[in-house]
Amino acid sequence: MSEVTLGGPFTFPGTSLTVQRIGYGAMQLAGPGVWGPPNDPDAAVALLREAVAEGVTHIDTADYYGPHVTNQIIRQALHPYPAGLVIVTKLGARRPADHSWQPAITPKELEAGVHDNLRNLGLDALDVVNYRVMGAGHGTEEGSIAEQIAALANLQRKGLIRHIGVSNVTAAQVAEAQTIVAVVCVQNQYNLAHRHDDALIDDLARQGIAYVPFFPLGGFSPLQSSTLSSVAGHLGATPMQVALAWLLHRSPNMLLIPGTSSLAHLRENLEAGRLRLSPKTLAELDGIADAPRPD
Ligand SMILES: NC(=O)c1ccc[n+]([C@@H]2O[C@H](COP(=O)([O-])OP(=O)(O)OC[C@H]3O[C@@H](n4cnc5c(N)ncnc54)[C@H](OP(=O)(O)O)[C@@H]3O)[C@@H](O)[C@H]2O)c1
Image (cartoon, rainbow, N blue to C red; front, side):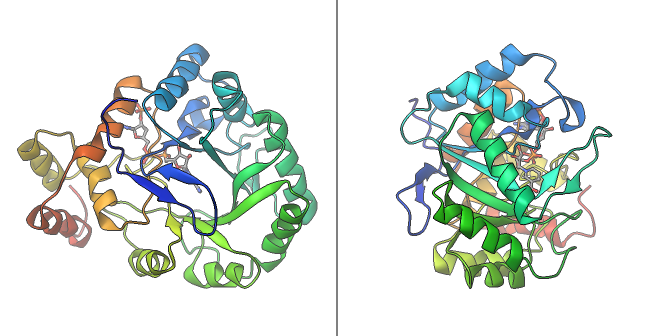
C-alpha cells in the first residue's frame, strides 16, 4: 500500500468489518447508461486491481448495474477476494430489456437478488446488503419498508447476508428499519451542493452508523462551483479532491465511494484523504450549499 492515508479506518457498528474511509463505487464500470459491458473490460479489471493495490477495502456495487456486468467484472478482477475487502451491494431494482430501472421489492424478488449477487460475485454470503428504495432521489418515496427489511432479516438468518443497510431513504424509514434489524449503513444522495441529509448524518454519527453518500462528486452532473475551484486552486488540489475532503471532514461516519472509470481519477480521488481543510476553508465550502445554485 502507498502512503495514501485514505481518510483512516471505520468499523461498521456491531460488526468485525473495518474499511478505509475512501472506497470505490463500481457503477461507472458498466457500459453507457449503466447497461451492458464497458467499452474496455480489461481497463475495468485493471482499475479494480489498482484500487485494491492502493488500499481500497470498500467496494460498492449492485447486481442491477449492467445488469450482472459490474459484479462479474469485480469477480474477474479480484476473486479470490483479499482478506479485509468488504463488498457492499444493493437490492430493490431490476433492469428489464428496455434499460429502465424498475422496483424489485417482493420478498421473492429480494431473495432472487441475493442469489444473483452471490452467483455473480462468487460468494457464499454477502458482507453488507442495502435495501434501496426506488424513486428519483432522497425522500421522494415515503412509506413503510418493513416488509422488505423483514425479508432481508430472514435472508440474514439463513446466513446469506451478514449485515443490512438502507439506501435512498428518509429518516423515518431508517428508524423503521432499526425496529427490525441492526442497520450498519445508510446510503443516500449527498454532496457539497446537495445537503438534505445534514440532520440525519449527525444522528447516524451519534449511533456510529456509516453514512455513505452516493453522487459524492455530483454523479451524472459533476459538481461545478467557482468557490470549489478557487479553494482547490489555493490548496494545489483539484475541485473533486476538495469535494471529497470536505465530505471526510463533514462527519467521522462518512464513507466515500466515488465512482470512476479512469485510473487517473481513481488515484486523484484516493489522494483526497491527505487534504486537511481549515475551519475557514470549510466555512467557505459550506457556503456552496447556501448559494441559490452552484455556478
Ligand atoms: N444507492 C444508490 O441509489 C446509488 C445511486 C447512484 C450511485 N450509487 C453508488 O455510488 C457510487 C458513486 O456515485 P457515482 O459514481 O454515480 O457518482 P460520483 O462518484 O459522484 O461521480 C462519478 C462521476 O464523476 C467523474 N469523476 C470521478 N472522479 C473524478 C475526478 N477525480 N475528476 C473528474 N471527474 C471525476 C466520473 O467520470 P470518470 O469515469 O471520467 O472519472 C463520473 O462521471 C456509484 O459508483 C455507485 O456505486 C448508489
